[in-house]
Length: 553
Image (cartoon, rainbow, N blue to C red; front, side, top):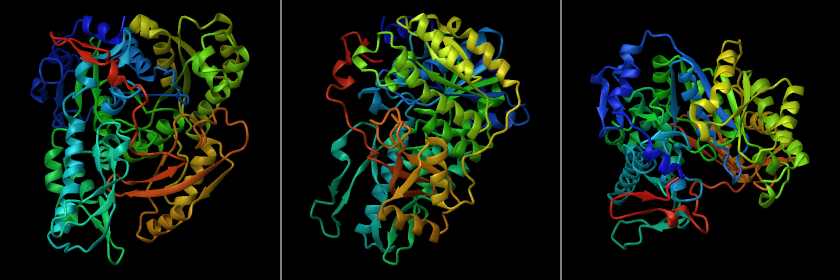
């Protein structure tokens, strides 16, 4: 049975009933139909003095084309915690239409560990990403309008790009202003995918509406003839953009198949952005539940690092437990096994691939000082010998493991993980960061590359060197860094899966995201506008005359 069929057959409750489980008064719920709602930020005043629950961060090994099921495990774990009597709430990211119609699919979990209504969430949901896209593009329109009417701010360079929430490689580099109208200036420009927009990052890192407006004011949109920065505030754009985002800043309340609460809010990618849901949703969840189960995008080298070095630092958060998701297939793939043979038992490939998992766990425990457990998303073809081999490897390294079967069994398949997470959450841990903010930009980059990725050196292009110098000269050297890197490898080469030989990271460029409050560092061939695969998921998605959707996953 497809995920969409399981979701359609689930018994879904009115969203007001889900709010009641969290003891949220109806006055704070803004319904989007029967099964989705926004939660008013006014609720935070009522929750202010409540004690925070435990924060569980779900991450993973470097992803593979096979899919590891990190969101599925997150949902299954939250359901299982509720099953054993702990009041848990899931805090997840919203899906982007790019992956939905591309290759990765949606972001609502799978099997019997899903968030519903699955179709609504994976498509337009409550319109947050559309609002972010509109705000981003309004700023672009205001920039070009200002230039058209005389360019009083003396723009020499426009750095702000337009965006769209689809994978469209044709838009990576474009020519604009070709109408030939008087005062219209031609220039080479480009689009980012909406989830890589600085507006998305700002929504996710803002604490309230006033903070949102202030962050928007600080966005650098270009430079003048004297190489001085020009900001959104100089264009007086912050008010209008904030108006477009006044609802998008509110978390969305939905439910799992087992009718447990989930806040879904924000959706930046972790390979090209900071990869975490909103601070507002996470902090609200910590007041509403005894446990918050949240996730960070892609592998722990990207999502978890950014959750800790950026989000935790900004919001004052500390994960009590980190769950690292892996599959036997993924471990064998990282051990060099041919993907066509991946269903077969291969102990040697498993042993080799386990080094990827061990490196991630070492980072969580030794670089960031946090408690960690491995969750193996189990498939029916996993052999007993493979499972026993991995258990032995982890036992030799004093790492706990749980076999999870929530895709097929729902919460029942994650009870063991829930109990182990509960026990681990009671243990002391000491959060540390991989770098200090007062260190130089290059030192911060090298700390992440060497400590987290395991690189033995870092190289910089002339462009990167020049921009780092400018960033430090104009006072942005104390910002955290957000490294844009391939998700498939610890290195900047997506084909270097095992990273056995010493490798170096090449820094090609940087961008100051002064509104979001970090510096994006570009490595390898990373791009901010993905393309569709040869056979995109869009070709398999359809709807019949009765409105039934098929092919969405």
